[in-house]
Length: 314
Ligand code: SF4
Ligand code: SF4
Image 1: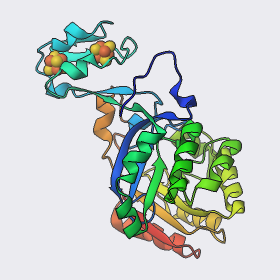
Image 2: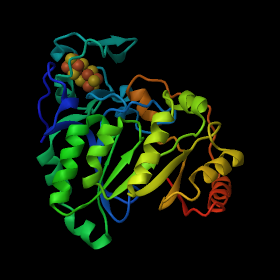
Image 3: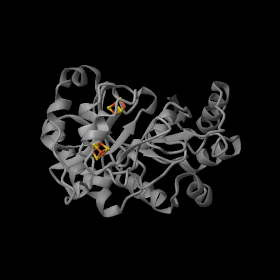
Image 4: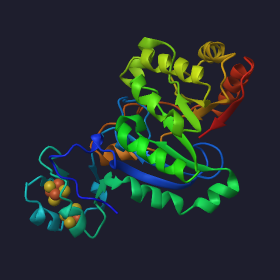
């Protein structure tokens, strides 16, 4: 199912192939019913709380679980670009030298090195997703294209959506909204529901938390609403970023009266923290505290007071 990726090609411009890092079956949080969620690699945002840090880089990369290594050095022998070294009995990979040949993954018996992300065809994704057609039909579910940012690989995403629609599957896209309008406009005929993230309404705070300004996102939201599509707003509730009653009231006021089906408050968690270590990155929110359930319910009530339906999700 996985295709070879040559160094010369840019898989992000593919129409019939793309780079994904997971197809999650039996998903119940990414739209109605039971769904399969296809996670594409590549995202223009760098949210400090991202629980899928492997989704940000659009290309395949390596997870390195140093603690599993027994220093047998078999991987060292097969690594032609000499990207592997041992420093103080601990394996290191020079990611600039590594050409992702994955010979090390194949020779290691301890699961120390794993590739994350692979090139795949539209047909293979569709075949995999359609295996659970019965569950989708019985539960009112379908497929969700997520990421990363699925519009980052617009050609691939568009063709996936078209193929799923040919099979009468309910389609959802989970987007940051950070994309050119011309690209978003292409997908409307093939999408039943949009999950649209709003991280913060304040431009400066948004940029500090995500690395980008929010004007493009908010302009796109207005245009999507004008199109009359089904839309759920998703709000990750992040300590020290947007977790105040004042902000939730502001958000409720902003969304009030708009044709939004519901608002999902997503509770902050650190489930993805360990993955930063596997990627040799530092988790940016290491001192962040949790949000209590009571606090989330308070925020839910505030937004509901603006006439919106609100759920708490995880
Ligand atoms: S082959 Fe696996 S266990 Fe052996 S040194 Fe390499 S990473 Fe460590
Ligand atoms: S993927 Fe290939 S180049 Fe990269 S560390 Fe492993 S053996 Fe070396």
